Structures are given as C-alpha cells and as structure tokens.
Image (cartoon, rainbow, N blue to C red; front, side):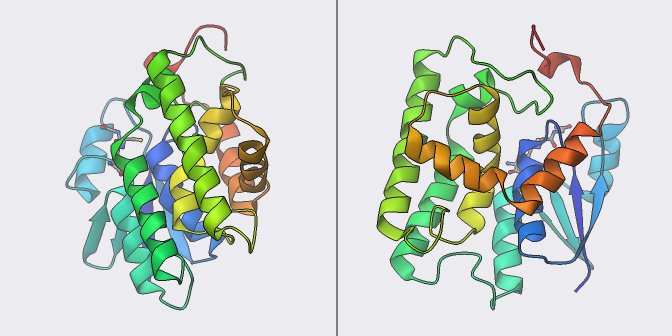
Length: 219
Ligand SMILES: N[C@@H](CCC(=O)N[C@@H](CS)C(=O)NCC(=O)O)C(=O)O
C-alpha cells in the first residue's frame, strides 16, 4: 500500500491536519504532498487530484478518498490491526458520533477562531454562539474521558481517530485561549505533547505563505 496525502498549508488547513495526525501518529507510511491553498492556480492543482476541489485527499493507487472523515475511515479499514477507532462497540459509537458532530457543527467557533497557527496567542471577544460551541466540545471531551478514557490521556484512552478529528480544535482553543477548565487543558496538553503534533506545528512554523483574509489584527 503506497499512500499519498494531499494537504493544504499546515498553518491554516485544519481539515488537512486531521488525517495527517492520524497517519503520522500511527506511523503509517505516506507521502505528503502540499498544495498551498487560496492562491492563483491552487484550485486547479487540487482539482487535478481531488474531485471536490478541496484538501485533504488521500491517494491509494487508483483510489482517491477525499474529505477528512472519509480518509480516517479508509485508513481504519486499511489497518484493522490498529485501534484507530475504539475496540469496544459503545466507545466506538461515541467516538464516531463525536467525529461526526465535529465534522458537521461548530460553525461559530470555526468562523470566529480560524486555525492560524502563527497567530499571536490570545482571546477574542467570543460571541455567545462561539462560547456555546466551546461548552459543547468541553462537555463531550469530559464525557468520553469519564466513560472510556481510563487507559490514557486521550478521549478514549489511547490516541485515535476521534482525537485526530479534534486536533484542530485543540489548536483553536490554545491559540485563542478558550475559557475551558483543567480537564480540557490536560487533554490539550496530551495532544500537544504528541510527536505528530510537534512535527505538524514545526512544519507550519516553517511556512512563509500568508493568506490575507485569514489573518486577524494584532498578530
Ligand atoms: N469537509 C472537507 C472540507 C475540506 C476543506 O474545506 N478544505 C479547505 C482547506 S482546509 C480547502 O481545500 N480549501 C481550498 C479551496 O476551497 O480552494 C473535509 O473534511 O476534508
């Protein structure tokens, strides 16, 4: 199996970060291909590999899997020996529900707190809706940790797909100093201690691309 993961800029592409973290943290070999997004010609370059015109996309021979959640599922199916989703059915159901909710929700958080890894850290004037998103995520994290997190510091104990899906949220909470409690902070610290996290953020720090519309005052 020879996998190619096509991603966007590491500093901005929260969707790309998810499957990248998963592959990297599970030490699954893959070739990384970066297409800088939202610049002249980038849409055409993405469309050459991904029919959605968006990154990430995973190429496995003649198969292209686009969309971060589908990629996580494909990787999990491809490596059944790895506990990418929790082994226990009820834990797996919760992990999948959380991943799906991440995928389809939290518009206010995404809009107000864009993932810009080089942004100077500090809070913004969080809207009511953003605070509601933060509360909901914090409650979900606590629920997973309480029910299934006994074997490690991650949502379901060991690092897995649900954590990969929430990695960009950890980045957003950190960058914007989201008002969350000690339990959430210790989960965030575990994520930020991962070798994969360090590698992704180091890659982001080395990037020089800047996309004006994602930059916010005071960076
Ligand atoms: N639901 C998709 C969203 C992918 C997405 O919106 N990707 C953005 C970058 S983070 C993108 O490709 N933007 C470039 C463009 O639209 O030209 C996923 O989970 O993969």
